[in-house]
Image (cartoon, rainbow, N blue to C red):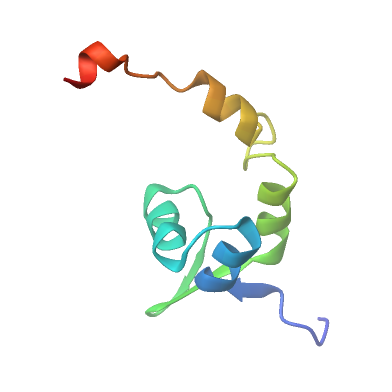
Length: 80
């Protein structure tokens, strides 16, 4: 095994993804950021983070841009 750590904290993953600590933890809760749980400690595998940064989900099929554009949007009349 290599001497370097193969995981990062949820906060570090959030920084790498350009989001806040709270947003990163919400993404973990929704299953959008994969984690390894060790007791109460949550760690994000660097390999999984790299896949996210490259725009590929865990299955290797959907990019973030595709997910954003395919999400249903509410019209302004529905929002009222």
